[in-house]
Image 1 (cartoon, helix red, strand yellow):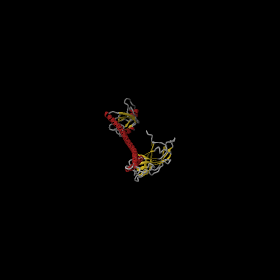
Image 2 (cartoon, rainbow, N blue to C red):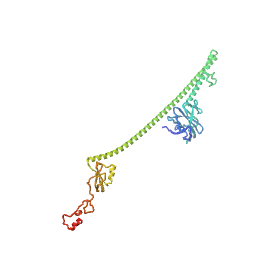
Image 3 (cartoon, one colour):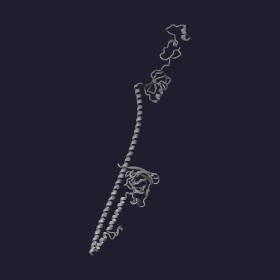
Image 4 (cartoon, helix red, strand yellow):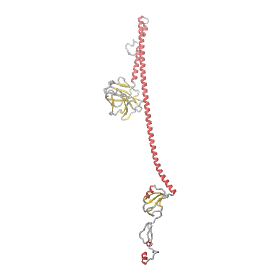
Length: 422
């Protein structure tokens, strides 16, 4: 895996802000900047198909760098901090230059950006790179100018090719614009014409013609060599072009893969949200189903009890809790409760209100939605006519209690008077 680190920075074409990037001296093919451009704080649309980008770099020793930069599909500019950029330690000053694609080239001698047809050049605000000195000085690297552009190799090859063609023309025919001394009288055509003119004269002319032929042969040989050199340069230029196209294709493929991964991630997030919504809906339905199941169970139990005519003993409770049980709806047909205190019925009883019952009475819920008692109506108390207090329980009434004359005994007048209360 390549050892690389990328620092993301935002640069504006108008708004100044202090940006300092740290780097280490002599690092090579490992440090990159990913730059997003803004215009007054708004994202500036840089297009890979319309724009070209260059990094303009001033080193602490005043040597300059001007290199071509890649633009990705999202409009970010990728800058490599080359070994030559990091050759001198200290603060370097940097800006980014944007031009329309095909409208500018780089002067290979001065590093100047030259535009075509007065095209536009747009530069960002300047930012800084602090190059920290390495622990051990690398004496093999010396700081110098670096002007690398995509057009550099092509311009050099084309210039050398044109020079070779002109030089070949000069040796063959002359009239090549004075690129060498005496080219109009020192060329193959001139010597040929001279040889032809003097061939019929003296032997000296023959020798001169021979010399001219030799010179012409040498010139032709030199021209052939120059042509071969030109072809070599053209082959190199084609190789550079093919490498550039390959890099562009690989960059496009990487960008497409990144876009595809981004799309897949978005779809996975959407699917996850849908799954969470479905799970939440299922949980809500489960709670509703559980509540409905509980109600169905109570209703079923009530129906079964009503069909069977059976009682379902529940608990011993005070009379006051019956109203709460009925209101809450937890009571069913046949539910039987033992009442722990004396009570008087209200209008929820099928006997009507005002009937008195003693503690221990069993009360059950009927299919009509009212309460009923298992015992008959109870007597609150019993007393004879001669008694003043009502007695409860198993009461034995005697003749004395009711004021009657005993039938088994003979009573005196006083006893009769006493019984009759006279």
